[in-house]
Image (tube, rainbow, N blue to C red; front, side):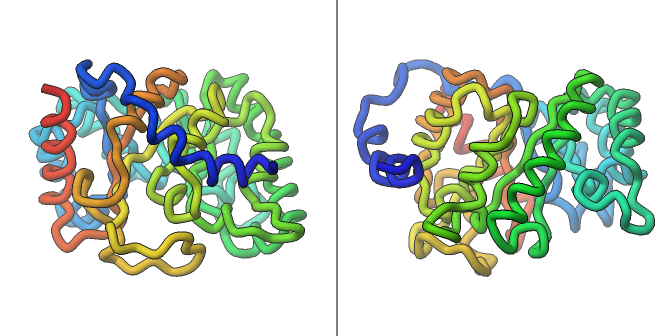
Length: 292
């Protein structure tokens, strides 16, 4: 049986097992994070006030986006003023994949700035269509990311790749882009696994975490609307993004197996919401209710 088929077909087996230490406190709550892209509109209007509201809601760390833009650096400063940790940030993937593009900051400079601002993780948040048109394109991306991971490792920074659903779309001979990454990423190149997109791609998140033990550095906790059609490798309706506890993804066993397999950080995220601030409060309150 192929690795992908095993992950998909065995999902029910893992979910049927008893929850890990079901009576124990939910892990990561003393360091629970949020990907600030969730609040991008609010941040554009009132960065300082938004960060303060995040801290008040109970989040312990934040993951900015767009590093090293002036706005992202301000996110870092304001979060730390509020007592929150900042370990990781998303950044412009073109610095690694297309350094020849006009206006793109060299990756070495990004690493230097990341060190200056005391970041321990940097994450490639996306792949443009041209970089994922076929398996050879994915292989080329793997080579570039491995080279960048060598540099980042020398700077004591963990480089990771954040998935969406398109990486799980079967391509030549049924193989996927994610298969290419799993096969070709070096030991210094990690994954930031987004459970929403993994689920939407037709893969069981718990099975994926188990199969990549030691290779996932961080998780994005994001719920998927119960009526969603799976798999879906294309466009996603805005209302498919749900608050944690309202959708089809059971976060408790995911967070427990994540801790058991050594994943460093978990960040709540919700790409779309009519009221993002209310959504992040609802999500963390649900997680808190499972930790009492």
